[in-house]
Length: 280
Image 1 (cartoon, rainbow, N blue to C red):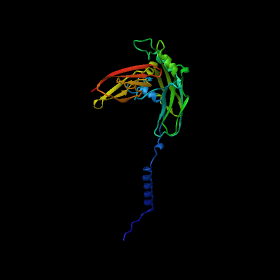
Image 2: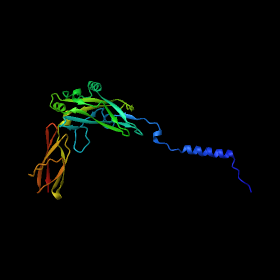
Image 3: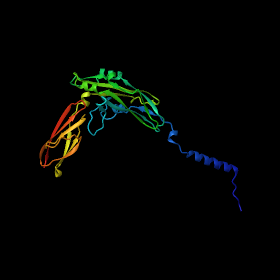
Image 4: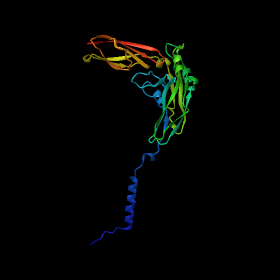
């Protein structure tokens, strides 16, 4: 009977092929591949890219139920603009120390170029936010495993409040930028020019929408006021004034009623909005 013969040369060839196949299927962790961590200011991205971007990070009015770009705190006399530094990375390992600084030179160039001119009203001017009117941390740390670190540009609330009544009216701008980091810095998103119009963000504008449910003689009011801190609702039916932000109100009888909303801002200024409804 014939016997098959497995020569040493064949054995060596078989083992070599097995090793080669094993190596080609070896699992690789993502961290084994090269990647770059880029540090940037999200505010700079919002200002420079996307619909309506004009190169400025505009501090917009605070509207009930919508994202905000400032938090005013009368108790601490602070007008805080929440900002952050972030990084892009496949694997955000290791902490990152980021150095921050304000930049007035860029704002001066924009003023000179007419970036802040108000058409039809040259009396409204824009100035560099004075260094005595704000504080900014010198550095911020993105923690190991994290992609974001938050910080505030804290502006003196009394300074902005006084600007509301100034003549001529003044608006302010200041650049906030990354001056150094342990990682690569995105050159297109390293500087955000913060623009603040005190009148636009401190003076309240009362506004609301209504929905009438005649089956229950009830009206729902949705508060969409700007820059309000406290509210007062008068439903025109002799009931007590309500201080809720938004709510529903039940009427005792059919009729036409005038709803009055008074919104008070952080400076004490008020704004009033009325609307008539009919309960069947």
